[in-house]
Image 1 (spheres, rainbow, N blue to C red):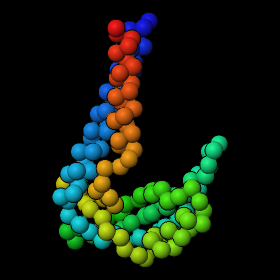
Image 2 (tube, rainbow, N blue to C red):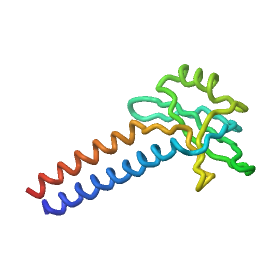
Image 3 (tube, helix red, strand yellow):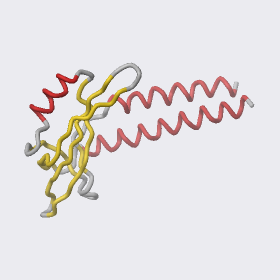
Length: 141
């Protein structure tokens, strides 16, 4: 039974490491993607509650043109845990009609990224994946 638990920890750990690797690789590659201006055609402030806090997100529908073809893309962006801060960010940064810089994948122009940076969540996936792999080694020893 311990071997099965070890295999589960190992599988989940390597899966998380693979997902993080793919996301980091994509972020690095996107630094070379063509730049576009994306117009905000719809912007809403959404809130999500859980047991401990409320989080506020900007839900954006963006329209952009690449090689004379127009595309739409939707994005959800975490803003804040505080409603006033989130509303201020919406008012200053994400109003309908505003344009924001983005990058588009030349091979798949329907893929639009607002950031080319490696996200904190990707680094957390690496840490969690490594922890699970190390825990799995305890079951194999």
